[in-house]
Length: 358
Image (tube, rainbow, N blue to C red; front, side, top):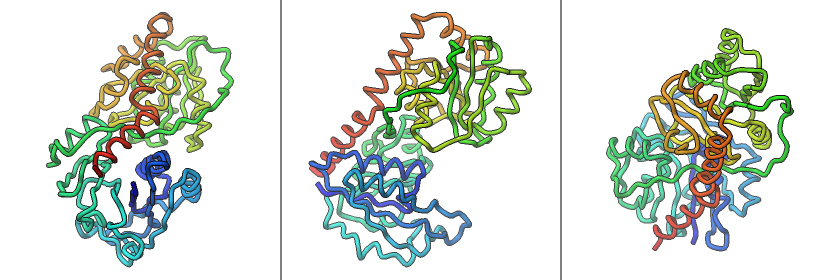
């Protein structure tokens, strides 16, 4: 089966781009021939925004996994028109839909260029925002990351019978070793991009209630509000690390934790951070928020609470009740293997792609 992935700025290191790169790279190459068409991060017409440029390491990653990477020139992206047309592009010199069994996109839901000009080849549309929807006749399925996101997409006009949920594919490396915190029995923590706009005060409010000489809280990234809050609360057993894109460093950090203490003001659709934590068998604590995708992810591998008092009570329970801790940890591992592991996600895409072509 011959598949074309097409993405504006598609070899950048952003979340949507890395998602598509990961799927393309992990498809079994004895079944699929994969061409990945990607543009540079061309300037926009009608906006000062500039998409991330190509990251050469992402191109090499895909090539190493047998993906045929095809650079496409674009002079500008015109966001003053609904279809966000590519201006001065050579895409149509390189791509002919007649040569492909399937086209895969990653976009925001509206009829975006060049997919609005692909009429016959089946399209698998992966949506990473849910406020817009399109019902194109040759879109076989639209893939959303969570049931909550799917519900919003249907409310926006998307046809329910042509949609499905597949969680994001998250690559988990085999990393040994951990950070040196052997003097502490209970190590809570989380990793988050440095963005004060998603700051939640609940995890550290809860930790301040249970902190002792046996506990430590580790924060990888997270923004300055966490540092200020820790100082205001008088928390002493806490350590901050700058955000990093180094996957090995992230998983060495996760190897150190005993409990993943998640917090985000706006909630999650489907959190890669929680998937990464569960791959390490970590119980996960989170809290209610406007988006509640984290609750569906965590299931019985932890708890989702409403306030810092309840959050602290779960922390204390996991410190005192080894049987309950083991129950949550085992469930985290099971959920990761069955629902979120790379093999589980790729198997779902293989089945979907084969159905679309057949």
